[in-house]
Length: 252
Image 1 (cartoon, one colour):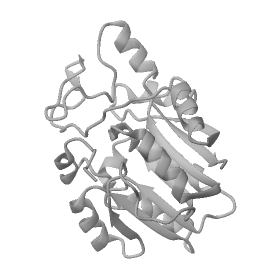
Image 2: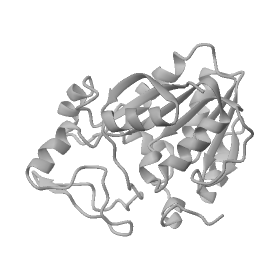
Image 3: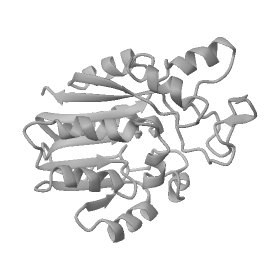
């Protein structure tokens, strides 16, 4: 099958795939994601982190559920090679999440897609496959930026592009400059973010593929000293937060 993901070479350099530094620069998203995962009951025994990069998140989940079998899947060969050296207790798989995934039906208790669906051209195929390999009543966790965040509402009002939407897949394009600080950082390469959802649109989209939303938690994604204090406040309101984390259950 022809690879559907656009500009795959972008995922082969450090800073784009999910290494620890990338998580550290993403506000409070990581601790909130881990909080939701730790509350899943009964404890999942088979776990898949899709778009997991080097497996940093997978390794943390393995500490929460030490008896589980944790899998990290990513399209980046380089990320997987690094992960296999660093995290011996995680199973690594190189695959394209928009193609048929190399797992049997109803195999996983928990699937995580952290900042992953924004980079997909064919999100429908991904949700179809996630439904296929997840057990009934299994959990799917999706974290993603919020198109209707507080800061995006302000930016669009003044004719600016929203955060986390990249008009170019090759070159960084600045959105706005405030107090001499350019957002996003002009030294960061694009990470192929193609789709940004609102809370309402993602809830409905998940429902089409039989994922019932159990909880939506807002998260702060903006780690810059200028915007972070405001962003943390808005993280308590999922509809206005810069990003959100969905906990869902597969119904059938």
